[in-house]
Each structure stands twice: as C-alpha cells, then as structure tokens.
Length: 95
Image: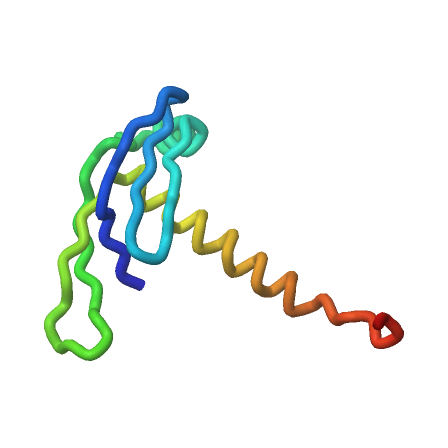
C-alpha cells in the first residue's frame, strides 16, 4: 500500500489531516497521546520504502509517526467495515 500525503493541514481542534488520491486520514490528539504514552515522538518523520505495482523501483514514502499510525488505523477500520458488510445478506422476502 503506497500512500503519499498530498497535503497536510492543521485544524482548529488540534487535528491534522493528510490526504492522498484515495485515502483521507486524520491525526487526532488521541493518536498523538497514545504514541507519546508508548515513549515515542509523534512528530518524528519516518520514511519507508514501498514497492509500486508495475515498477521494480521502490518508492520512498515519508510521513510523521502519527500519520503512519492514523493510516494504519484507517486501513484497519476500512477492512473491518468491508468484512462486516460482507456478512450482511439482504432479506430474501424483501421487495
């Protein structure tokens, strides 16, 4: 999964968001607090090398520790929603 933050903005509530073409994530104060509780700096920039589909050259993706955590949480939430919706079958007696 390759997500490149296209823009970062800081909102009035102390949240920041990073957006890419396909996913919007919000870094909440709760995410930053959890990272601090674990003894890490939420604003530390971390770069990862991710393979791109159709290319043999990996791409370097940089984001803050809090943004990576928010992206991971958003992915988990999306997966859970898809799995829960797959379990719902329509009522065969309905319309």
